[in-house]
Amino acid sequence: MQHEGKEMKPIVSCTGLTKVFGKGELAVHALAGVDLEIMEGDFATLAGPSGSGKTTLLNMIGALDHPTEGEVVIDGAKLSGLSKAALSDLRLHKIGFIFQAYNLVPVLSARENVEFVLRLLRVPATERQTRADAALADVGLQGMETRRPSALSGGQQQRVAIARALVARPRIVLADEPTANLDSGTSADLVALMYRLNQESGVTFLIGTHDPSVMAHSKRHIEMIDGKIGSDTYS
Image (cartoon, rainbow, N blue to C red; front, side, top):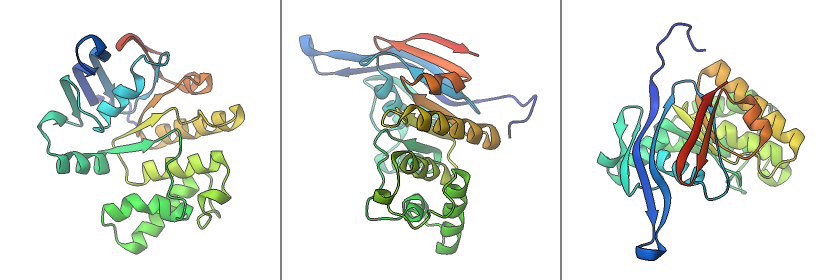
């Protein structure tokens, strides 16, 4: 839980973030000098029309791509100064990812999909199972630990993905259109779940979305347009 009166610090700081794809007349400025801080405990949405730069910005913050200019700092670490191995390590320890397409391994059970991150972290087998089962229980999937993705609904698969994103206790969870493939009722349930986890554990969420149900839960609404921050408001 967040402590009242505790000074919140930025988990993410972006300064002058620019990303250009292509060269010359064909160059596309996906990001055009973005300055942004995401604070501890934020439950923030990143909205804007297609091509506004949302996914590009999430990829920069997630250390999945490099900016053309500018700097990203995650939990005090400047990404530009890190080797590929150090960037992988930072992603593993500090960042949880939730994708539109779930990205579960089809031949693994729900438990094994959640455990996958803990294997990479070399967590012992007994603790892996305990933590994975607890994470699945947190997202309402108790009793479904041994089911493979094909035996789960879309909403249940995304719950597994949320459990996987949170099981390693990251500093921030980045979600790119996490409800895009789901019906409105399932979307609303998932957003309420993510918001509850944010409130209970204090984990920071930054969610790229067009979904009104996601925005309705958002404490902070960041709007992008033409590769820039158009507005940034707290509710």
